[in-house]
Length: 340
Image 1 (cartoon, helix red, strand yellow):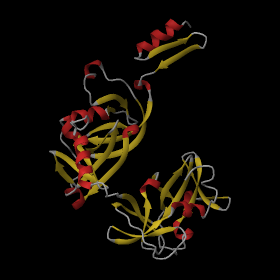
Image 2 (tube, rainbow, N blue to C red):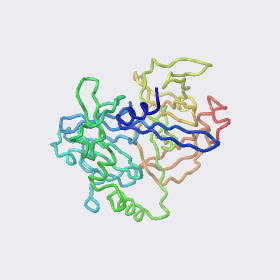
Image 3 (cartoon, rainbow, N blue to C red):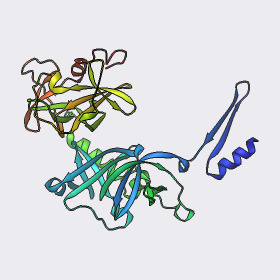
Image 4 (cartoon, helix red, strand yellow):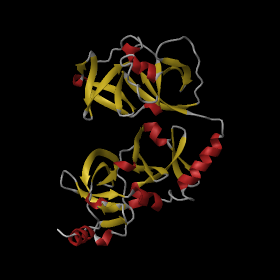
């Protein structure tokens, strides 16, 4: 096949062929295939009775608020609805307003999809969060190509067509992105309000064994999982699980720190996944309670292996977990060869 045929066919689907010739060093051929032919992981959400897909590359986290918490969560600053996420102001936009459809969400429930597009982070309020799927991205028709809030379409597993949202386009339409956008103004206001000395730390609050409240630095958390208890297997004398194509060892916090047992016979295990380099380990706790953002001041109430110290977090005395010491109770070589 001649190169002209290749070039013509790739350009027909919106791609490009680029040649870089350096005398005496060779020729580099670069073929760019458009996103419109890609298979990508996406979050499927619903608003106004319709399904939409959001590329997971733009997804940071999901927040679901209920009852009183949902009713009082949204504030307004500079005319922009905001939510205080772990002490930081997060600009919100409502998908039903941007698309001009009537919302059909549950009463007393607020679903926020936290998204990032370039340097802009914002929250998209939707009616419901459904699931994640691998989707095939198809191009928009010529009649819809000028709509900057859509990046393409896809056919879902049930045969229905769903539009794929363009996260940056949504941020621009909502007036959030840009140098004078709401996100930029809120970031400036937030920094000024906090001042230079308020160094808050985000903490995941858990319970394990007969202890009170424990805290794990959120920076050490890769994922939170609920996995079936009967998926536990044994290898090299350790509890392990098959997780994302690899074998993940488990460390039970209550056993490793000598916290006694807790009457929890749920079929699902609460697991905090810790990632270090390419290695993962599952931290098994009895309950995942909350996330808090605090200015932490440690006190050494008593020396205990696996505990950095105690601090008052969310009004309760809380032991701060030493993740390195905890993990090394079952695998002293876990951090070897990789800077901690």
